[in-house]
Amino acid sequence: MKATDAIRLALELSDGDMRFLEEMREAPLTRPMVGGNHPLWLLGHLTLAEGRLHQILLGEPNPVARWKPLFDWGTEPSDDRSVYPPFDEIFETYRRLRSRTLELLAAMSDEDLDQPTKSPPPGLEEWFGTVGQTLLTIALHQGYHGGQASVARRAGGKQPSFVPSRELREF
Image 1 (cartoon, one colour):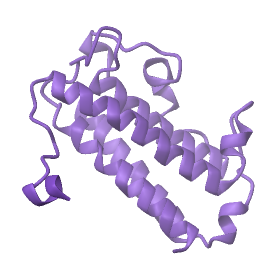
Image 2 (cartoon, helix red, strand yellow):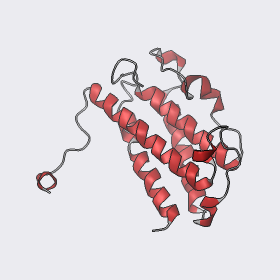
Image 3 (cartoon, helix red, strand yellow):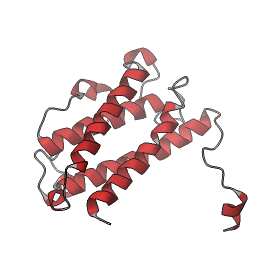
Image 4 (spheres, rainbow, N blue to C red):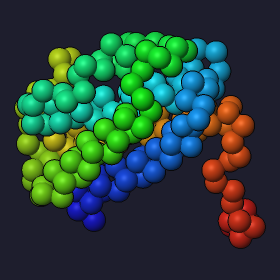
């Protein structure tokens, strides 16, 4: 397996967790616990991170930088839905940005993954110093928050998203 294929798989697997957020469209402020991140904040945070990915890789301005006061690292989710952009606008923006990420990755070779990024976040060069490190870090970051989305989903009364078959339980 090529490294670009492994990163693509990681991005696609973590992207699958977005269904947990999408299923919470009607209850986007459901908190999994006191102080936990609700689905609307998670969606915005992941969208902001995807825009930051393009900033890091390409040196372009983050296309959703205007959302930093709502969703950036260090912000706290608000229970006031009116402070946030519409759920569907955020989701569509995420999908557009992720599509571009996958297009960029499709054009890369394994050697391209070792190239330095254009604009790594200060102090986080260890995770964002090369193209490959950055893409993998974003996939892992999304998987981390996907777990939070899964817990919020269950707190919202949804059934488990994965129910193993009898064969799997006996495996």
